[in-house]
Length: 195
Length: 195
DNA sequence: GTGATGACAGATTTCAATATCTGTCAGTCA
DNA sequence: TGACTGACAGATATTGAAATCTGTCATCAC
Image (tube, rainbow over all chains, first blue to last red; front, side, top):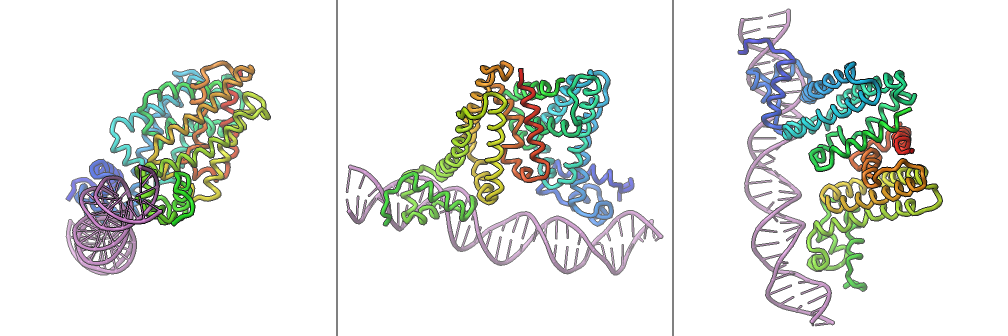
């Protein structure tokens, strides 16, 4: 029926659209197939299970944030160490907050998907931890951070800022003093990292 | 029927027992009344709604942790500032971890109750924040912490250690490197607080 | 009069019948 | 030949009728 070949990418595009429309509870593989004008059997040719399809679309969503933050990680515009780490954390918080605030339903949808895609989430966190680790390493080499194991420190920084990136806390991201709280926590961490 | 007078305390005792037996989804006011050998109308004489009963039993549960930590807060055994704050955070983590690990079902039960007792939880957090604030104040006065607004700093410390006291993270409290992670985060925070 | 009861209305939950969905695969079509 | 289809079995979700629960209150017992 369709003029274009059926590719994993087109299926993911359609899945996103169907999830946006029906939400995670109601979206079915049949819906996705219908949106593409094919039978659901064809979708199963590209994704072995519905869970695999959901994971792929979740990975894609998380990947966008990873790419955005990779820019900050690689950018030479912000100085090494404290400036870059602060910028990175602020950008992560900002990205999450906008995802949650701009389209709460879609955010809730992906939060639900995330709850049963633990492998994908672990991969995502590993990538973010890698970025933080590199920023810390750079800061240590520039003499702006006290020397310490970058991976371990990255984990601590990430854990200490959970409140500002873990979707479980999304409800408080729009509350009154959240910006001040973010600044207070970030300041505390950066003070803890200085030589 | 019963030999003793029906008091709020006896009702809370029975409610805890019923919750332990049936879980939060199945426990009914009728069950509580049956456990006490009275009609459910009598329970409503002491608690206006089932929600009020649940909140009271939740408050009681959280209160036990508050009392435990108040000991550490008031104790002169640990030195002021870093030592006391570290001891307090460790004890909080320990208390939560044991609650979660020793009786996972009961912990899940109270976690569910907590989800719809936001007022009670806010009060609980305020009390804990007050304790941390006092420890910080004491530390500042002893010259062991850098001067700063104690309430604001307490909030930051509490937020930065969420991973080790928020029930949402209970699943990771029994994982491999959690102790090392706790130490890393605590070290980072204490470094950030020093003068 | 104080404290407890249990019948009751409306709200909520349970349960089983019914419908829909997932994942497979033999067969179709170009 | 290789992408695609659609009928199918077993699993999961929906639905609505029946059962249970919450919260009230007229009445009872001491």
